[in-house]
Length: 324
Image 1: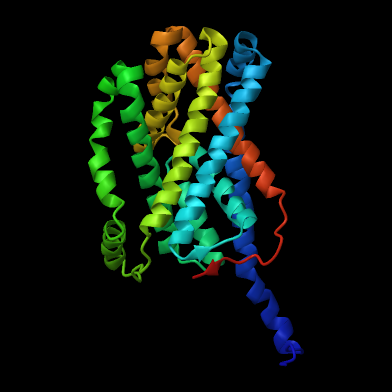
Image 2 (image 1 turned 180 degrees about the vertical axis):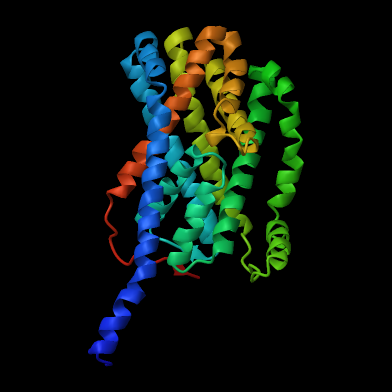
């Protein structure tokens, strides 16, 4: 075994070797603090609305809705993990959760690029190429929007036809998304961009089985996220199968429409508009606005809770992704 270098050479080189890792660590800590503050600020600025929701809806509907929202948000991680595994990057459940949920707080900063940037850097440090991490993120977004739009197409024409008629243009993206889900399409488009940037192409292809498993996680996530809104609707107008269908369909459409609002942090306002349009015939305009804002706050709270939980989880083994 080679002995560690000792003597003047080692003393002089060690500080220089540590400068870059230390600088990277400082940048990472500052960025994590910034995204935590951005998410917390989103909740803090709407605290009066949250107090109003507690007064009108009651504590138990709020708590139940928050639990469902947190569960639905958590399932988006399993969707992303399935996609990443399908692209050849295996990870432990705890380490992947740390990367994913911390990166999701980046969406509360202006623009939608920050979660991708955080995932790219985390993947690079653990052996996965940046291109693979970008591909996984894009596949997850495309698959989520495809499933969401399909759910909206099934539920909203019967439960809330006015909403689907108003956002008919979003449905035009569905055929394009289905083409992008073909195993060869997305890698080919990414490789064109990588060739322009003079980067190595990606060779991984997402299998149909991985796509279907990830799609099931996306579907379950939309059901839970829709149920979290349905609980709030039930607190005002009573629980019905129709309100559940409207809530699931509206949330599914709202998420997809919100993805298109790239400059808007976390799609704020865009998703709320879809929910208000869908829910107002059932509960009235003013209550629908209250429910949409409450839903937004609970989703933000869920993001913050999940990120806080994984931040405190200690790695159970190696701190590396396994490729292949």
